[in-house]
Length: 440
Image 1: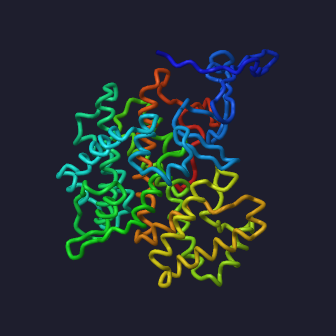
Image 2: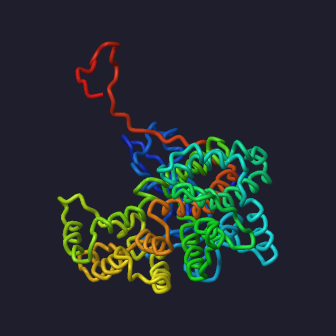
Image 3: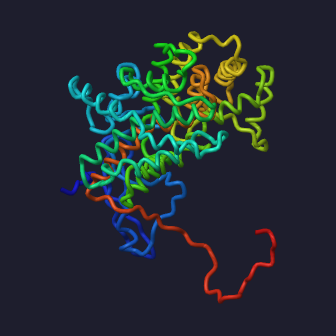
């Protein structure tokens, strides 16, 4: 059954080109801006639109996540993310994102068991890690191994089979934490640690990362809760670059493991998932609290290439709602672990205080964002900056699989095929305009 979009009453847009008028339907959203439907514009007018970065283009219809950047609102399936971070846990939020409503107790218990039974990786996958250099970035391992899952779990590749789709999403979510932990262990030269399914998702991840044969790792409830909140807050964020990548890859009919691997690769970029690592690297560059004013001046200077990472957001022109939550979590974590022997954490707290009082940042609404606080928390827990994006990817498997499922089940979805504004050369004959430069 084809979904019908609800049109706004008495509203339509008209576009006039060369004295010819084209009528564009207007659709209502349940929250947020109305949408102009230009899907037939090229067919009717032989014109198409130009929108670099897709900042004014809705690529799909979705019921999963809603963001109001001006008001600082983030909701999963209608639930405020702050309430979910306080009252829920990552697996319940994952279930909510994928299935559309909060599960009852029996459903949630069943889902926890279904996730837990997939935490182990096929034994041969361990051999994949031996092929990576020891100094390989953990995200390189994450991309490779996630894509390789399709060669081991061939009973969940048929995207037209609802059961196989569900099995694939559960495997991806469960195994992402194991792959991430193994990437960390491999990068520091320690033996892999098997998951323990009597632990919750966040606890199990910490166990796999920090336990080893010489010394048992005692899981702190404070750190486990902080890890769980980080997972929840990073679970989905509407049609961002990596989610759009997953949907675009999925639109071709690619298997779910390949689509999620594509999302991991997109997330790796420093302008996306790598921003929290960049924020910590910035702090290391600043080096000392006595240098903060100097670097804030550099950040204000338009001629200076230095950027104050971890402040401001493309979508949020108000305080990032995730940052508000993580600021509270950050205080609890730092109190729990102490920061006496970590100058970088001391520097981060001092930088936050100074920036929040500076009129320049207030006027431009450059508040500390989710990347600033998550980086501080993850460092305090014991993770190196190279692991920050891996943790982001683990969390985002919830949103990616939910978005992929929604796209696959959408009867009007078609393969993604953006157009272009061509500005290259035309009508050259072979041999014309041959390069004389030797710089290639």
